[in-house]
Each structure stands twice: as structure tokens, then as C-alpha cells.
Image (cartoon, rainbow, N blue to C red; front, side, top):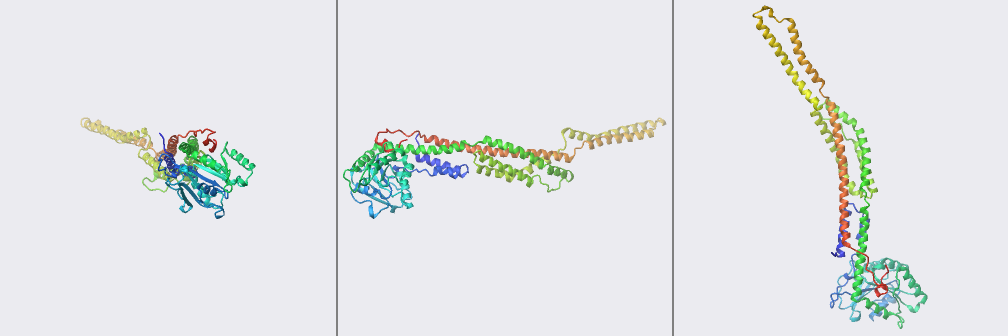
Length: 527
């Protein structure tokens, strides 16, 4: 399925805006997409009214100050449509010259209308060419450079005009190197009557170094036009204005834009691929072991104090803190170091730091609550299962055994009293009384003693419960941080998958080759 380039660029920018807003893409990297120009040549003019399937070839005169760009356009028009010479030594406006059958669709955003002069002609021979005279890009006036850069995306062919004196202009070469592959190029050495053959040869060598293997160079002179190559220049442009050539230029421009977009997106995809969460997890494991050991040692004393207080003062409030400023600082050190380790593992640190903020703020409350809950639960059921069984058993024995002993003694007393009526010698005597008291006393004292001895210590029970709760709270804290790391990894992976989908839609392969010896092969930069 084919996707429109502007649609792909919009999707890519929306993706970058989302990633940047979440802190997962830096403003510098996001700018790689925001600075891509979505404008193209076909967006400048509407299709011809007589042939809606075609559009004109857009040709611009480019060059430094005083090379004669405006004079060439005036020569083409047969009238002074662009001010030149002494009247305007430096071009400050854009002059459009096109056939009257063409209609302007829209102008580039931000261009002031007073910097654009539009002229029309009725020459059918040049009906499929739009001529633009550009400001002097080597001017000290920044507005001129801005106008040139605003118009460049809308141009098919750049007529690069030089003079014998200024063909080595440095600013011109910088523009040529920056824009070389984006346009077709024809070269004009104007004012040839003032030049030497060696200058022409040197200019051709310079173009060869820039990548043009067989550039089209035309020597012209507006002051002495006889015998110059102006007519040949026009003929080559008319050939380029054919529908097939324009379509090829459009196709090549589309391929270059897609290729550039795909290369840019691949750079961002490589950034996400470089994120090493395995390394970050290993770093966290090492940091946690050290921090956990410190917390266990440092918080052992307040846990012991709280256990003792609870054992001695059940139900009373206390100001003993299980998570103090020292413990909070140890946790902050751990989380700060984790954020630094994330940056070293090429993982965005801003969203991770934000996600960990809740851990910083809630740990004191959560850990204290979880630890105290475990301690209180331990106090409800002190000791182990065997102790609790023996406690219940001895408590029962404290009641049952004395009652049984008293029942046995009572039976003996009743039986002795019954027999004493028949036999006076049946009196139980003093020994029986002593033994009965001892039996009843021991039947209560022994289980009472055992009950007291096996009674679990409330302090030990509270301490054991608090320690258990502390361990569980630390384990919960670790799991919470690990869950945050996992969530960050999953979110970054989802963004990476979304980016890969856009990359797949680009589908930009190598730019279609154009026959080297053809007209397009000569006006396009090699490679």
C-alpha cells in the first residue's frame, strides 16, 4: 500500500511530539523531524487549465550579486520585468514569470507579498515553464537569504548563474553542496565577453569535483548576445519541461524525500535499540543488595525499641519512627544512582525519574504501615502453634485438675463419713486431710506453673512480627521499583514498534537510476 509522503511525515512528527512530551526523545533529536521540509514543487502552481494532468517545470535563476540573473530573465521576456543593472545592483525581491494559462495555487508560508513580483506572458513555446528570478543569496541582507531558502523546496531546476569574475564564490559553493541532490542543475557563465577560456575550464573542473560528471554549461552575454548559447539553454529547458521529464523529476524528488525521512527515522530507531534494560536491571540488583543490607542494619534499633514499647505499653501511642530521615536518604541515594545508571544505558532518565517520584514520597508511609501491621498481627497470636496449644491445654488443666482432685477428696470424705456411722474407727484422720490439701494444691499449681513458663514473650512476638513485616515491606519496595522499570521498558518498546511501523510505510528503496548520458543524467548530481 502506497502512503503519501506528507501523511508519513505528519505521522512521524506526531510520534516525535508524543515521545518528546513523555521525555523519551530529546528536543534535539525531535528536531530532526521538525526541520524536514514537506513542501515540494507541485505545491506551488495549480495544473495547467488546458492539461490538468501536467504541471509546469519550475526554473529559478540563482547566483551572486552582479552576475546578470535579472538581465537574463529580461532577455527571455523581451522586456524589463525584473529590475537590473544600476537601478538595482542587489536583488531584493522574487520575480515570477509564467504563462497566462497557469494559476497560482499557493505561495510558501511566511513570504511577504510585497517581496513577490508576478509577470505573465502568452508565449505558447514556454507555456510549461515557470521562471523565477531569486534574490542574491550572497547579499549581506538576511532577508534575501531567507527568501531564497523559502523558495528552494518549490524549484525543479536551478539555473546557476556565474560570471568570469565570480564563478568561485564560496557562498555559492556552500549552497550547491547543501542543495545539490535535491534539484536539477543547469549552469550559465554570463558576461562571457569578459571571460577567458581558462576560467570556463576551471569552472567545469570545479563542477566535476562537486559531483557533476558532464554538466551542462552555457556561455551567455546580454551585452553582446550574438553567437552566445542562450538559445541552446532555452532549448534544453523546453526539453526538460516535457511531461516525462517533469514526472521523472517528481518521482526522484519523492524518492529522495522518502529516503531522507527513512534515514532520519532509522537514526531515532537506533537510539531506542541502544537502550540496555538488561544492564540497568543488573545495576539495580547490585544497588539493591547494598541498600537493603544498610536498611536492615540501620533500622534494627527502632524496630527493637518499638517491640519493647508495645510489650510494656499496649494500646498507647508512640513517637518511635520505623522510617526516619536516614532511611529516606539511603532510598534517595539508591533511586538517584538508578537514574544515572539508566542514562549510561541509553535509557531516557526523565520519565524514569518521574515514575520513581511516587516511590520516594510514599515509601515512609507504606513501609511503616506494612511493618506495624505485621507486628500487630503477631501480638494477636504470639508464639508458635505448639505454644498456643500448650497454653490452651494448661489453662484447661488449671481448672479441670483441681476440680478432679476436689471431687476425689470429697468422695473420700463422704465415703468415710458414711462408714463412720457403722464403725467408729473409720475416721479419716489428719494424714488424709494433709494429703488432700496437697493433692488439690498440686493439681492447680503444676498446670499454673507450666502455663506461666510456656507463655510467649510479647516483646519477642512483636519483634518477630515487626522484622517479618519489615522484610516484606522491603520486598514490596523492590518489586515496585522493578515494576516501574518493566513499565518503562514496555512503553519504550511500544514507541519503538510504532516507529518501526512508520519506517515500514516509508518503503524508500534506492533512488531510481537515470541514464548517465541522458539530459536528466547530465543535470542531476551523480549518486
